[in-house]
Image (cartoon, rainbow, N blue to C red):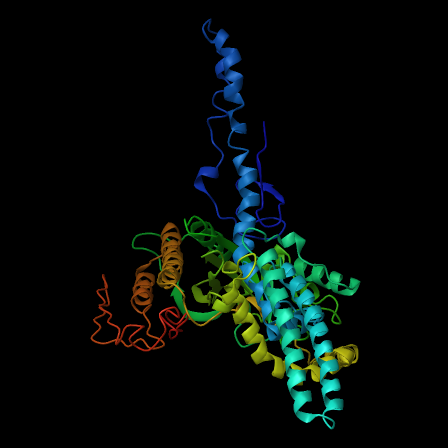
Length: 571
C-alpha cells in the first residue's frame, strides 16, 4: 500500500498526508479539503481481479487508472514550494527596502548598527521581506556612503586650510566640489544601482552584493537562519515586534463546564482547539495566508523569569543570542500552562498588495481553573505600505531624462553643505567603530553577568520603512477585509468547536456580537457624526466623514491614516 506524504511549506520536512502541525518546525498546516486522501485510487484495484471475460481487455486499461494517484501528486509538491516564496518573501517589498538603504543614509546606518552589529540580541521578524538580501545591500550602501564621506572630509580639510588665504573663494569652491561629489554619488545610486539592479525586471535577491568581511558574511547567514524560527523576542511593551502597529485587541473568558440543554460536555484539550482554529482559518481564500505557532517572550525575562526548560531551549548560551526555534513539545507545555512569561500564540498572517499590506492576527487560547474556564485573546497588527520615496525603483528609466537628471543634481546641491560639515564626524565614527563596538560588547557582557541584559529586538527594518498613510483607497478597504474576515472565521470556528463538544455557546455568541459591533473606529481626521449603530442581530451603521480627505487639506496621494488603533474591545 502506497504511503502518501506532504512536505511542509516552511521547512520542506516530510509529514503524513493528514498532518495538522509539522513534526519538524511546528507550523500549522493550512488544510485544503481537496488535499485529503481519496478513496478512488484504492477502489479500482479489485476491479481487474473480477472473474469476468470482459474485464480481461480492461486489465491493460486499468493500470493507467491505477496510476491516476500520480496525477494529483505533481501539484502537491509544486504547491508546497510555491507557497513559501509568496507567503514568506515578497519581491516588491524586498526591492523597496533595498532601495531605502541605498537612498537613505540614516536608514542604512540604523539597519547595520541595530541588526548586523548586535550579535547578542534577537532579530525582529520582517514578514514578507528577504532580510538577508536587504542587509547585504545595506552593508554595500554603507561602504559607498563611507567612501563619499571620506572624500568630503578631505575636501573640508582643504577648505579649512585655504580659509585664511581666500575666504570667499574657499567657501564657494568647497561647496561646488562637494556638490559634484554628492551629485555623482546620487546619480550612480539611482541609475547604477536602483534602476539597474532593483527594478522589477532586473531584481534578483540571490545576486545581492556580498559583504566584504568574512565576519559580516557569517552574521548575515546567521540572521537568515534565525529569521525562519518560531520565536519572537521583544524588548518593547508589546510582544509583537516586527509585525507593525497593534490596531485592535479583545479578550474574554467562557465557562466551558456549562453543557447544552440535555447534553453532557465532551472534554477537550487546548491543543485540539488550537489545531481546529488553525485548520479553519487556513481554509480562507485570502492572498498570502500563512498560519504558524509562535512563542512570544520579553528579552528581559530570559535569564531568570522563565522556567528552567524554557530557558534551556531559548538561552542555551547566555553569552550569545536567544534561540530562534523551540520544540513543539515546549510549545504544548507552555500552552497547557497558559500563565508563564513565555506564551505561545497562533499567528495568522494575510499579506496583500505585493507584501506592502500585512495583517497579522495573534490568537491565544488558555484553559484555566481546572479546565472549566476558557480564556481567548485576539490582537491584530498592521504593517502599512512603505514610504513613497522608497518606491522610486518603479519610476526610474534606464537612463535619466534631463528633468530627472537636473532634479537629482539640484537636490545634491542642497544636501552638499550638510554632508560636507557632517563628514568629519562620520569618518571619525568609522575609524573608532571597532573600539566603540568592543566597548559595547563589554558593557553587554557585564549586563549579562548582572542578569540585567535585554536580549529582545527593538528595531524592525520593515516596520521602520512603513508609512502612516495608505496610498490607495483599496488598500484601506483590503485592510478591513483581511482583518474582519480572519476575525469572523476565528470566532465562527470557536463556536463550531464548542458546539461539537456540546458546550453552551450562548455567552460566546453574545461576545461575538459585541466584538463585531464595536469593531468600528475613527482616527486621524475622520469625524463620526450622526452614526447609528445597532447592537444585536444586525448592525446598521451610518458613518459620515466630517470632510473628504482632499477637502480636509490632506494631499490626494497621501490617502488615509494607515492605522487607527481602536480601544480594547469586548472585554
